[in-house]
Every structure is written in structure tokens, then in C-alpha cells.
Length: 75
Ligand code: SF4
Ligand code: SF4
Image 1 (cartoon, helix red, strand yellow):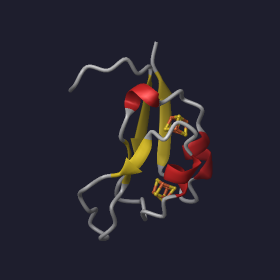
Image 2 (tube, rainbow, N blue to C red; image 1 turned 90 degrees about the vertical axis):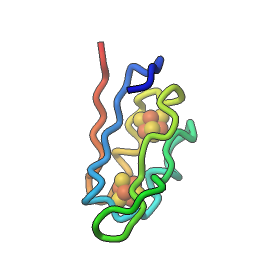
Image 3 (tube, rainbow, N blue to C red; image 1 turned 30 degrees about the vertical axis):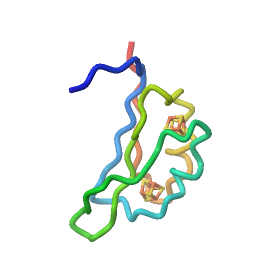
């Protein structure tokens, strides 16, 4: 696992994600993006592309209509 300064982990349930992009648009820090791979439903799942930018504000998780996103604060 690469080293990061992040104190927050954003976990996306990739199989539930439908790639709607609401979380990507909602992130005030532009930290969420779409993964390059597809899930088994044929969608590019969202992911935390830049952990160092994430503040743990939870906007992405609150925005997700399918509750795919879990945020854990470390330490
Ligand atoms: S918790 Fe906030 S800063 Fe972090 S990815 Fe989600 S919306 Fe962006
Ligand atoms: S809002 Fe939810 S369903 Fe939509 S892209 Fe983000 S994680 Fe996936």
C-alpha cells in the first residue's frame, strides 16, 4: 500500500456503485474520481483518487443514493 498523509479512508462498495458520479461532483476537494476498471455490472466505480486531498467531510457519502460509501477516520 502506498504511503499517504491521509487520516481518512473512503471505502466504496464497488459492486453496488452504479457510476452515477454524484459523489465525484459533490467532493469539494476534487478527490473522488472513477476507477479505470469496470465492476461486474459494467460500471466504472467511484474511488478516492487522491487521499491526501480528502478532509473526511463526508459529502460524498451523504450524496450517494445507494449508500455505497463508508468513511473511516483514522487515529
Ligand atoms: S470525504 Fe469529503 S473530501 Fe473526502 S472524498 Fe468525500 S467529499 Fe471529498
Ligand atoms: S454516488 Fe454512489 S453510486 Fe454514484 S458514483 Fe458515487 S459511489 Fe457510485
